[in-house]
Length: 129
Image 1 (cartoon, helix red, strand yellow):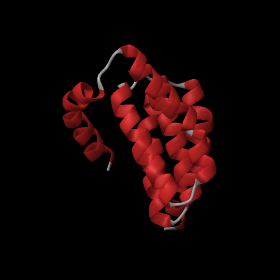
Image 2: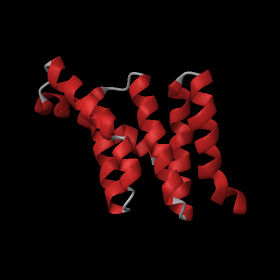
Image 3: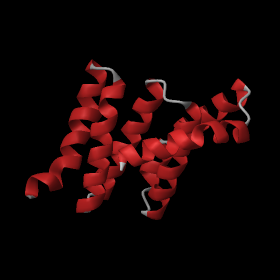
Image 4: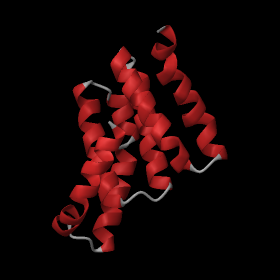
């Protein structure tokens, strides 16, 4: 359907521009990931990654586990690099740096956190896909 091809653009405006300012950002996460998947599926790569950018911001603001968020940022940053989305990739650099510093200064050892969170990450990634 032609409507599905526009979903990524429409959701970027609704959930990325309006909805998350009037509601708790956590409520935007699933629709933003859906918009990302639909954008990638229908070739609207630019808007797919704009939705990911907003998803990562909402995840940070809503208090997502920092180790999980760090892995999400790295995963999506890698995909952005693969698809040559440099401008969108630069937008998430501040999230990546902030999360990294917060993890470092919180005293979490990356290896300890990885052991505790790996199962949760797998479950979350399965739910998101």
